[in-house]
Image (cartoon, rainbow, N blue to C red; front, top):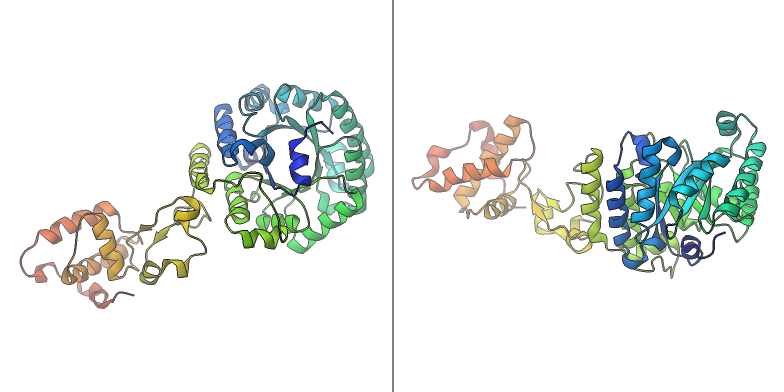
Length: 431
């Protein structure tokens, strides 16, 4: 165990640490972050926690043994983002890989490596062609050697496929590896098929068997759509270090999304206490949640992973209103205030579901003040256009051009009557 391991210290003090995987496991989502972007992302993520970035974020910078370019990218993050996060290099459980990983982060403050060790019979046979206990024994030797040569670099261990392994065996080696100096023990749901109840039981059993010195980390995939739910179950069981990835990027169907996990734990004290327990103190510095949308957009632009209208917390639908009742009573129809929590000002969008109030609000945003007759005429036009084009949202530019013509008419509006098919829309009242 390295002296001054800020991640262990944070977890043992009950603080939450994010083990950020978007640059490493996210690559298995068929994305590739440049070295410069990894540095930028690490700095931006660390800045969410101010000066306490290294105590709240482990940034898996890369897998140095992949190739020379990956080694250099990992090293660049370690050297250039060391004041913002705790940089980590990932490696297989072989002496050669360990030495390469250590060299990639050596000299950086708060540096770490994570050694991957097979834990289940299936993965032990697939990865090292041995039974699980033999593979774990070999991993224990590698960890001991890594700690002895780390020179202050923290050594974490990832036990692959822990849920399908013998839980007593996992607990035994989690305790032994901690005793040999491992900083944290990552339990990886490698195939992503856990349910929350089983997740909670797994971490409780391993924690009880490994002993009080072991610091467990959750690394849970999303193949059944339960990555976030399972991560919350792990946190409920006492885990305080959780792997996650921006936009949920990771192997196959991904894992818990960083922005969703962090927001859920930080935006509402009552919700945090439901997960972490009454009286919890999860942060050294309260996270600045207004940074989340910008970071998500940055990651999306770099990787090509889209932000959709239904993406929670950072999607394009957040802070938008398109129907009447949410327009007049927004707090009744949203779980949090996007402007207060995320810095996102509300935007009214014109769609085929619009009421008169919604339409007038969009018109005013575009510089037009409509009387009741103009509102009815414009509402019929907007609904007809949406259905004719097969698109819900009426573009601002198209609506503005229509309004320019509508408001320029000084004669009776009968010449601008909407098509008969849209006539019922003129009777829609404000809701």
